[in-house]
Structure formats: structure tokens, C-alpha cells
Length: 440
Ligand code: GDP
Ligand code: GDP
Image (cartoon, rainbow, N blue to C red; front, top):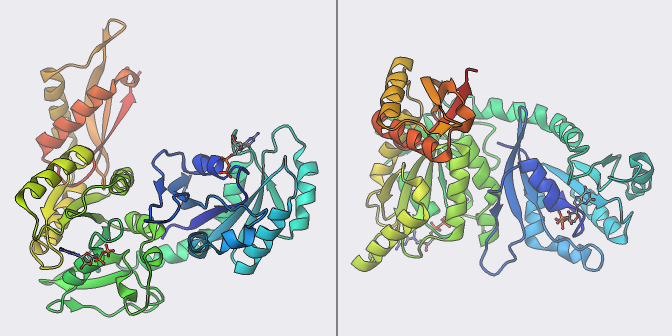
């Protein structure tokens, strides 16, 4: 599972700026619980071989209500779920009383903790860092989140911390993906019916394998067999803990969702036909596209809907989630079981498509036909030349196209190529990626 870094500190010390630099994405997931503030951001970041989840914990004020704020359940949960805490302070403000309150609170968690002193631009880093030793949370790392100074060094030191642990986990997780069948993550916002669906999938007629040793602690990997086919479900809904009292916040964890997306072969995105398509559905969907995972869409709670409502929800999905139109859609009732049986077959199809071999002669022939039907535009009077194509990767399929002046290929033409390749190769259920290489 991806390690989780939580960014913690008073307002305005630069957490969001650092978050953006660490994730380099605009697709941050924002926590959206009814009745709670929406000030936590989540994103996946990568540095070389090191991938991680970053959480911007938002507004700890520290100064006046620091401890109370820290006690806020959502911040506490972010801290509890984090593998590493990055405590951010502001070089320009110097050491504030709020910082001491936060430091004390963070030390108490016993979690690995790194102190980063931000906004060192225009200062002597050594001089400015000296006073922050008094926080008693170790050596300060000088950074400037806005221009990136020191950030790579900070990340390097973080990565070194968890590389060993990550290797161990990877070994555990990858111990048997082949024997354990494809890994399927059931994801969706709270109350769409994930737990109901997972229980339905694991229904009593199926053989549920015993937990593998070592994974029982907070087991999210559930191996099971249907029709002699082996699968592993990744539980993001806390089904395994249903005996305990879990409230909404504990039950739905964006971190677990991101980790499940990262660890799965195929994701089943559950939507709620009764309540409609929300912003959070769309932002989860965007995250799924970015991950490149094979995808099946389950439109749940189809039971008991009036015909006009059904029509409306179909239109809603086509409009708001148009970018998922490559994925199979299944209208299901997790409650009554209708349609559920088809989901696993759809997941298998999606995975088969995502891992297909695409021979170079076939790709190159399709490229030639596609270009002939509709040639690329002229650039400064010269036509962009696309010469041949080959497969650069699987899951998701990557097609690499070689040619001249490929930097000038407009987005619209790139989309045209992707659509043509998709339909001619009949690739469904997986994102399809295209990369250009210029020969000259
Ligand atoms: P947050 O409230 O902790 O999330 O802080 P923000 O990321 O919103 O940053 C607060 C302010 O500090 C913004 O105006 C940023 O542009 C600025 N800022 C962030 N990082 C740096 C930095 O490294 N140097 C300087 N000079 N300003 C920074
Ligand atoms: P989760 O938060 O995504 O795990 O959602 P749950 O599985 O806990 O379901 C939330 C609520 O939706 C519960 O009251 C379920 O009984 C209800 N629900 C789940 N699936 C269906 C369905 O197919 N039809 C209807 N009508 N209700 C459902």
C-alpha cells in the first residue's frame, strides 16, 4: 500500500503550496462529508521510484484553539492513517506558541515526524533553522515550497524512511496475486452501497478463503472464489469491521480508497442512482482515470426507480462522467442482487483488455489507415508525419507513435487517434494512453 504523508501546521505556513508541489496534480480529492468542513486534500505523488499519498490536513490554527483543532476527529483520523507526519513551520514568523502546541501533540502520536521550515527564500537557511530546534522534534529541513528549494531533499529523506517498510509490504501484497486472481477494488463515496455490494459478492454460496497469515491485522484483502475462479476483493468500505461501531468518517476513508485504487487490477466504481451523480463521484472518477486502472461502473440502487428517474440518471452519467464512456456500465441492485453476477465477468473482460498484446504490424497498419482517413494538420506549411506505432506498456495499454514534429500534434488530433485506436482494436474497460516520439 502507498505510504501516507500528512502535512500539518498552522494556517498560512504553506501546506497547500507544498501539497501542490508534492502531487503535481490538480486532481486533488477533497473530503466531502455532510456537515463537516471540506478542508482536507488528498493526492497521489511520485518521485522517481517512490510513490506516496499526501494529505493536506488544512486548518490547524494552533495559536488559540490548537489542541482543540488537533482533537478534531477528521484531522485526528488523517494523523492516525498517516505513516509519516511532516510538521510545517514558517521561517518568516519564527517559532510561534502555536507551533509548540502542535509539536507537543504530534510527539504524543509516536509517529515518525519530520520538521520542515518553509519560506527560507531570502533567508540564511542555517540561521533561520536554528531557533526551530527548540520545538524538540528533530533537525529542521529548510525548504521553499513555492520555488521547490529543498523539497526533493526533504522527500528523499522521507522515502528512505519507508522504503524498507514498503518493500516488506509489497512482498506481502504481491506474494500471490497470480494465485489470488485479479484484485478488485470496490470504490465509491459514502452510502452508495459498497458494503452491501461486497457482502452480496461474498454471499454464502461462495467459498470465502481464510485470511492469509500476517494480513489479519486490518485485513482489507479478501480472497474469494466463484465458479472456481479466484479473486481478491479490496475492501474500502470497512465491511470486515462491521461488528464494531463505525461512524461515517471512519467508515469512508479517502486514503484507503486511493490505496485500493493503487493496489487493484480493476476498480468497480459504485454510483448511486437514487441520489444522483455528485462532485465527489466525478473527482473519484478523475482519480481513477489518472491511475490508469481498468474500470467497471456499477450503477446501484436501480431497484424501485421510476422510469423518468432512470432516464434522468442515464443522461446525468453521460453528461457528468462522459470521460468514463470506455467502461462497461451495469445497472444493479446490491440489495436485491440483480445485475451483481455480471460485474465479475465485466471486471475480467476489462482486465483482459488492459493487458492485451497489441502487435506492432497491427498498430502501424491502423495508424496508416487512421492518418489516411484524416491527416494531421500542417505546421508552418509542413505536415506532421506519423510513421509507425508500437505498444509501450500494458495495464493501461500504452501506444507509442513515432514520427516527425509530433510535439505539434494538437489535442484534438490526439483524441481522434485514441478514439480510432480504441474502436478499431475494440479496447473497452481500460484507459488507453498515447505517447509520441519524434524521430528528428
Ligand atoms: P496553508 O494555509 O498552510 O495551506 O498555506 P498556503 O500554502 O496557502 O500558503 C500561504 C501563503 O504562503 C501563500 O501566499 C503562499 O504563496 C505563501 N508561500 C508558501 N510557500 C512559500 C515559500 O516557500 N516562500 C514564500 N515566500 N511564500 C510561500
Ligand atoms: P457504503 O457506505 O457505500 O458501504 O453503503 P452501504 O452498503 O452501507 O449502503 C448504504 C445504504 O444504501 C444502506 O441503507 C443500504 O441498505 C442501501 N442500499 C445499498 N444497496 C442498495 C440497493 O441496491 N438498493 C437500495 N434501494 N438500497 C440500497
